[in-house]
Amino acid sequence: MSKPNAVGSFSFVLHGHLPYVLRHGTWPHGEDWLYEAAAETYLPILAMIDECVFFNAVPKLTMGLTPVLLEQLAHEHFKNGFEHYLADRIARAQSDKKDFNALGNGHMAYLATRWEESFRRQLEFFQKIDRNIPAAYAQRVLKGYVEVLTSNATHGYMPLLYEDSSIRAQIRAGVASSQRILGFKPTGMWLPECAYRPGGPWRPPIGWGAKDYRIGIEHLVADEGITHFFVEHHLIEGSRSEQVFNDGQWWKVGWDESAKYPSRGWRSVHEAHLVNSDGTGLGRAIALARDPRICEQVWSGSIGYPASGEYLEFHKKWGPRRGLRYWKITGNKVDLGDKHLYYPDDVTHKIHQHAMHFVGEVKGRLHNHRRNTGRHGIVVACFDAELFGHWWFEGPRFLRDVMLAFNADPDVDLCTTEEYIERHPANKVISMPEGSWGEEGDHRVWTNDQVNWMWDIEYRCEANFGKATCELGWREKPQVKDLLEKAGRELLLMQASDWPFVIRRGQAIDYGIKRFMQHVARFETLLELAEKVSQDSEYLGQLNEVELHEVKDADIHDVIFPHIDLNWWNM
Image 1 (cartoon, rainbow, N blue to C red):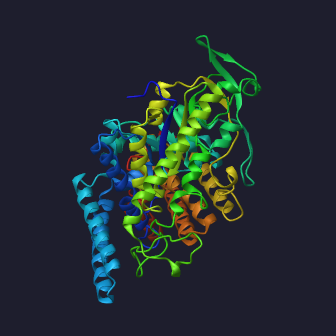
Image 2: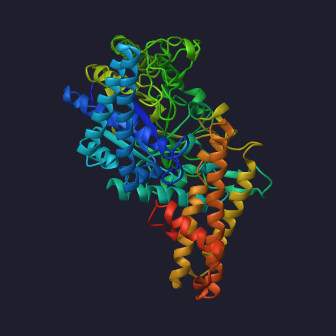
Image 3: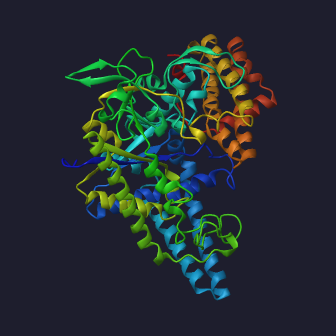
């Protein structure tokens, strides 16, 4: 229940996402990314929710689970592989314990025992929820503890896709996947990379033709039933006022309205804003902005809580491949060789201290908004989910302590974002500039000299697929339809924002290029086959070795999104 006398509301929004890695490598790049995130983030967050309930608190978490992540977590290949992964972790901890006892290092042997017990609990918990992480989150949605967000099917970067039909297909495929796996249709959406583009003239990042008009992303998501999404703060702060709700109706206002009446909450990251970039009608969907000051308390490398010396060091591990961690951060300028051993008893008070500081900062922001506007505001704290548990081992316990503190605080209404917009409907319409939550707030991470060659290929694939779905008569030709559906899946997979991201960041350059080009090659083979079969229905029986290999590879490796609907691109 909401708190009637609360000064404002607070929402944790975690973005859970990994690219498609099942059956595409294991270590150092591939399935291990997924297994680590499940063991260190997705299961611990579920356990954190249950722990809050055990303490008679009502947890509230807005959790993004991208469709490509849901597809992988729900797949039998993941479930079997994850059990083997946890068994390997248990065995590694046992082996480490023997090594440490032989070395006479009792404290490290104790830490190894803790790792063994932790991974045993993870395995027991995984089996307790019937090995179905998506269903476990869905159950907690039904209990009112969690709101699950959908997203684009494969995290396609919407502002840079060439055709609006491609954006619609990414959204439609994503919503359909979320609904099929969760059992309900989410109304909130995480825009991949918080990347937004308004309606209007558009010029692509490479030498392809400009377009006189592109549909604003708020219209594309609203057309599929999405009521709210999330943006970086500078998009709200740089917005223009369009309409306001007064005396029971909407009124058109000038762009200077926000400057004239700041007390109404215009351009505030603590207000929900309806968005419409075409200047012709009411807002289509609500934008909620990430609070930069509050989020800085966690993610900042200089003042962020995870950098505290008592916490577990992420980068230093014992032994080769899949090593475990036994050292603490010690200091953010301390070399790995000089790190001290981790002492679990030292972190409980530090987690509580940081949680209480965080709660105080949130309350300060909400009180300040109330003083300036007299209005009930919201603080939205958006983070990559993998920060909590994977990168910051103690992160889930921090979430727990913050949840418990807000449950006991009458000043702050802890809620999901869906609950907030139901209780406090947006009463302003704005138009926003273009941008993302990436470097410098624009698209430079995803369009630059290192990756623009990918957009040239991707645009050609978009154009060829659009032509094929319009001309090949797939509605009357089942074999052509099947090949085009497979090609559509490969198109979605090649559009993942992850491939240019890992190349630009230098994290897994070879893997990113390999994965992108694999999907391109399969797409082109499947599309060419569809064209040949549309002309000669007997052609499938005459496949050459290369064609047959590509078709079989697609069937063997790219096993998610089992129900591709070609109408996603054509309606």
